[in-house]
Length: 265
Image (tube, rainbow, N blue to C red; front, side):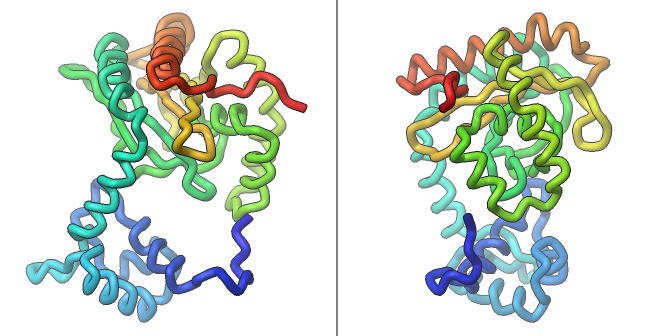
């Protein structure tokens, strides 16, 4: 649980990190006002933080438009973090091949607070696919990745998530209510299938959890496609089993345990 009142909690550091998390791959720089809007911090606070982060090399400010962009220090830290996730190396070829064979977008999502954030994408060549980018955040609602994550999380992990600041507690309650059914679905067929909804989930998707020894929680591999490109039936009969097989292969290559904990006390 994040205890903001704990005397050990460094509020200024937390605010600085929230500024860094405000940036997305598709951004062409952000102004202080835009960062303030995304973080909910006062603009005066953001100005001090961006100045400090700029002095330390985590951000750079363009003299052309005064907008801030990730700096070399932040890029270096990101490369170190990515390198620590050793499973990404064998996952790359497996998931790129899966994207090509199925014509779907393959993404890797991890939990970031009350959202799932995409940290890798694999696109099929010469095939139009849904447009999701690294850094995009998916709320904890009944979408494919959050459903698979909640189903794969242990009771202890669930308690930790629920104790944190979840913006949409009704949606989280729905995910917890359907968790037993989703777990049964994944144990029976190896993946969870979620039909297209509306808004950010207007695509058919299948998801499979993966557990890495480098991370405290499961991560989620997902294949997604527009309904016009891949029907629910094809996602369930073809894409889902292929994704499950790819993740099982990744587990064997990396010596990791199954992503779904099959027994609970």
